[in-house]
Amino acid sequence: MDRRIIKTRQAIMEAFVGLLGEKGFEKVTIHEIADRANVNRGTVYLHFSDKFDLLEQCVETYLQLLHESCMPDGEASRVPTKALLLRTFEFMERHAAVYFILLTSKGVPAFRNRMMAMVEQGIGEHILSCNIHAGVRPEVLVKFLSSAMAGLVEWWIVQSMPYAPEEMVEQLLVLLERNLLPPEQALGG
Image (cartoon, rainbow, N blue to C red; front, side, top):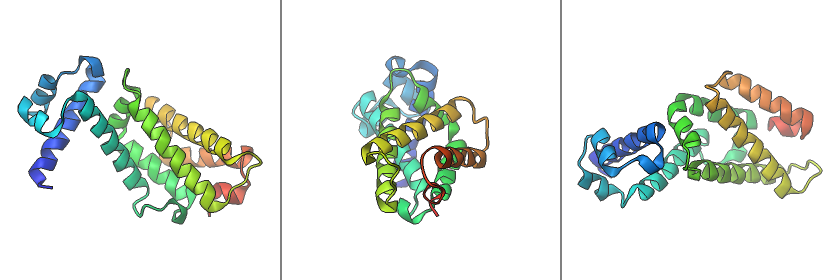
């Protein structure tokens, strides 16, 4: 894709996310997005059919960025759990402003729901690849862990990251070790 197209799409998405944080989804208009991105309305419509399409593509883009940054080789099983968690928290810390808006914007549960699905998939794959058994059904374990993980990340972002990423990872691993998994499985190698 042409660099100018990429830059224009990025500017439109950044303008949209900024306006989401200020006004909420329902009150944001294409005109405001175009003004903030310094493009005309027609340019916005060249890239996105409407603001719902823009929201959908923003959600996909920011989740993909999160996924790629946390698992650059695409395989969670090759990366120890501690390293994977640290990458996740460090990435979220670097991009906290965007993820804060996407996680907290009223009327836009799409990001949180999709993030939860992505976390569920990743945890499910990790549990299968590491053959983790915690005395509960795998689907219950996946749902429990993904809810806890997504909730913890959301709390951390909303609370303005009161602890460093390293400390969050250590705390999470202690919780897993004490309450759910044998130490060798919780630490993932």
